[in-house]
Image (cartoon, rainbow, N blue to C red):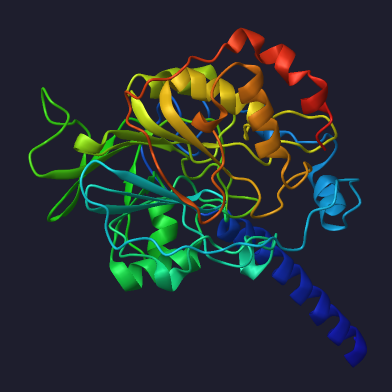
Length: 408
């Protein structure tokens, strides 16, 4: 055998070995195991699932292949309406603390909300990064955070709904942990991702609770009996079912759980944070059991992937958000998950315009479920504030009105 043939044979053998190693190692590296536990009604022993069925969250939103959809999206060849490169934001500076029953709420952008009440500062799904995606890539922020990070008051409690990059932003969570050492509550398996970034967190299954006291966070599957509010509590967090999915890579789908949160704040009342979800009556009915709510934080954006679409399985549009708002029976709601990162097809301000039109059409005060602008703080009304009920029977006709259907 000549030297050339030996070299070619050696290179070929090396390629075969490397390919074998790649096939063996790379999928396991990408398919990370975040959680181990017994199978149940939303965990099959390996992956989590939506009890109402997962088929609708696995299909590409606009039909065809996921690769094709992603390529059209990145190449901007999907015919979507234009978005601004940036929008003007006037950041606010929240107070250090808000005492008593007053509840001051500031939308910081996307699903990030600052809730201040009874001496507590609480953040939901915090993200201050310029981009949302792996390796610093992905959709770029068009709206600056409504509160500069350096103006953020000391945070006591952080809620992380699931592990998508626009909700679990590790650089932001690392900064918060290093600065404030807040209590962090998330869903099963996501604590593994956070811990790998040096951020400790308490992970809850649906229905499980954690109590924030003066000495820290205590995980507790059963609240105090007979009164859920325990002596010394500052806040209680209960993980609640929603309809979504989770992944940090393509291969680790649903290795970690997704949740909404019921937030009990003693004399200040209750807040429901939906995280990221599509509309399903089962999770809405379950969440309603733990009301009444003073405030519901509900997503209204990233609902359109083809012209005219009004919702997808894993994201609520304004029509489904109105349904959820009515069925949750909250005194007020804050619409989030729109206008910060471009994740879908609809126009930049289509979600709030559509929401306002639907609220007017159903005969309710639009201010009960209305955007307050990034960085604009507002006072949440008491849970028992007088209010005019919404007529959901009018919603289908409202959704088909010329005003709503004309929105891009």
